[in-house]
Picture 1 (cartoon, rainbow, N blue to C red):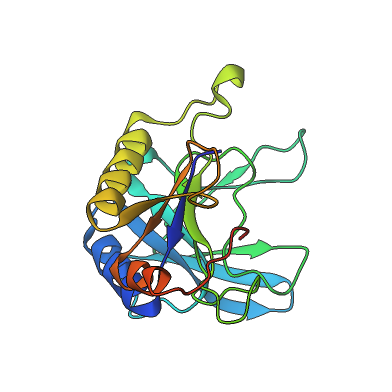
Picture 2: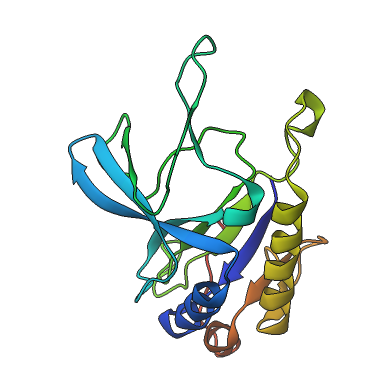
Length: 197
């Protein structure tokens, strides 16, 4: 699945959050309530802060959100009004984002990890991704609007960050990670960075 590897500090995360808040075609999916494994989710256009964690974004132009039934014999339910919210039962009590099943190409995920764990004081490996066209072969291609927005996000990331070889400058690889300005300065000053999420 397509993923863009990011290195972000809290200051960098604010830059990304503010840009996403201004993007009219996407909405944040936030937790409205929780009782054990029962969750309430809703869409919002902006959030005020981006602490470390996992987030979900919905491409409003790409179509409705669906809640997987969990059974091949039962059709998925559609979320009538994501801004009004919906309920979902999950198998665990620590979810920070809803589950739309493996093949929903109308949502993206964002993982922000300011602090790493692979070395003392390391910067965490963050990232943004989506399912893309993984299920095209079974008749579930990504909507054109979702692909276009993914490319728009990529242009924003590349224009506001520095591409660095991943996992390390000495590795024989064609993969890149993108360090936003504050994180890039810290990496250049010798701060270690996590390779794994």
